[in-house]
Length: 166
Image (cartoon, rainbow, N blue to C red):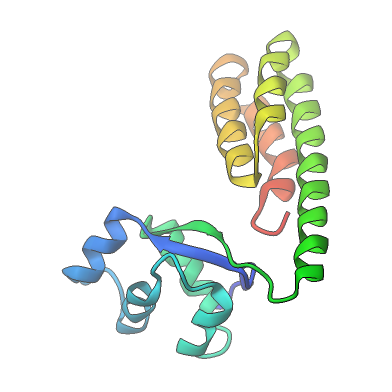
């Protein structure tokens, strides 16, 4: 279960499926993963959850719970230092702007004139999570209109930008 650790300030919350599994165990999870699922409450960040599992296991368990649809990213904790918070906000804004430019370019190239509509939706994205949803929708439309190869090219170009740390 060794996977990269997500953003230490990421806050995860249970989905309805995760809440149901935590309240009425269905055997889908081992006891360590279930314990972590119970601790994920939409308030604790990844850094504080690390105290409850063995080193090196947290990233994999979070990835598994996310893939199983039991948890989702709900936000980020605030840094303790106000200067760090400002620096982080500037870095996030710059990263989002970079990701938006690249997404718009890839969609424009793959979708032709229809890409301009998606370019506007990309520009309206307020954060990475919204941008991921817009791009996911655009890739579904691209797949329907231009085929699997075009969708694969877009995914390959955009996946590094839209990953958890991208």
